[in-house]
Image: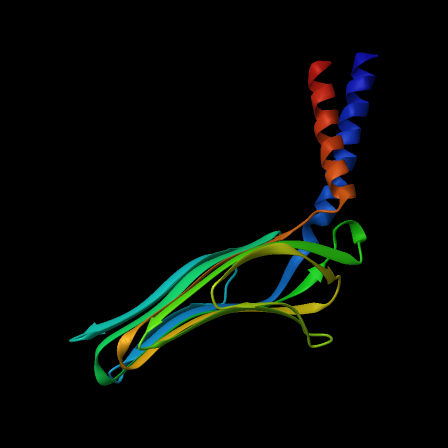
Length: 223
């Protein structure tokens, strides 16, 4: 009898885990994942970029007598979560010396709801900062529905905010994050960002996970 109970428990766990494996395609399904940094100054340039998914860290820098430019970026991209951190800085001690730094994210993805849902709920948190003294700094986060060309989220300047946004399953979206810092007549500028987007599993998916765990625990206790 005990072996039958264990078999039933393992079968329940297998069914639950099998259903969860079908959720693998849910969340963010990427079409393109550009992340780049660049600096130009005194007729020179430096840059770094990636179009692959996963984790990436990049930096670009230039410096010389009386000037410096730096742009950096670090991020992790998975089907369930996107995390980004980056900054652009420009400094020039004299006039007629231009320094331009840029840290950029340009990602397109298809939203796929969990458990066949027509909606993918996404929680987000964003922190933006910009300072300038005799230069120009700009930072922004924009999420656009490419099907309707509708902006679903837009933040810029100094801001810290969080919330949820519901995306239509099967539609394409574009996420743009950029930090620009430039000086042309002496001065300093700094723009930075931290942003996180997390796909929220549907209640059904969470219930399946709980079922798999309970069934596995029951099977172990009956051995």
